[in-house]
Length: 300
Image 1 (cartoon, one colour):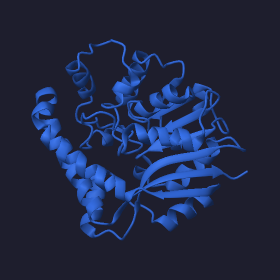
Image 2 (cartoon, rainbow, N blue to C red; image 1 turned 90 degrees about the vertical axis):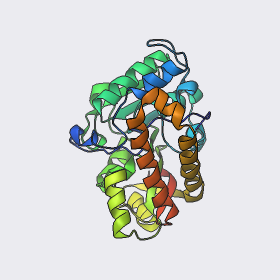
Image 3 (cartoon, rainbow, N blue to C red; image 1 turned 120 degrees about the vertical axis):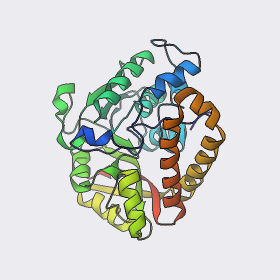
């Protein structure tokens, strides 16, 4: 993440995609979305003030490797001003705004949770990127893209960061991603979790209760799944090492900055994030949870 400040938890990072929005609100990461405004005010940015999307990215996203992950997508997908991109599980819109700011591409940012979607829309306007980023409230598995003037075959790229791990029906998910892509040059790019080694029963409980995911595929299963759903030229980049280092350093920085964090956001949000960060570290350090960056092309 750019800068040294603790990133904010968002729907774009480890947030469940479910039919019932009420179930989302029980997640450890979703107790106080007001924290973004609190953090902005702590930096001297008042309600309604214009915001630099690069400054905002240090507090509105929680995907791993910060802005570097977005730049990697731009390069891998060769995005430009003519590109149309769909961001699934876009959260507060941080990655979508950076894609637009850096590549000048057009992005549809789809988010399931309504309050997150509404705040994302407001933040995009404050960044003056609303001509490039359109926000859509919906579930990728059951969405009507026609409401925003899009549909099957509309996008040059589908992107997502640490969201797909929450969607159990991965065959339907990747089939839908494939459907949304243009026939000849459509590409998929995502950061996700996978099963590096079999999980213990305790690890499975943590994945379910702390991370809100289950049935993570192995490397071989993941690649086969993508191919079954109409993709080829799959690049499976194992990011387990860098991400394990990232989550360990994140916790150290978070604990070291406890006084500042609690002074701005309070004790309860600190405890919620501490619980989550500790659980993620345990899973990565176990050698069972893996991290992957996927790039794949739609079969012609």
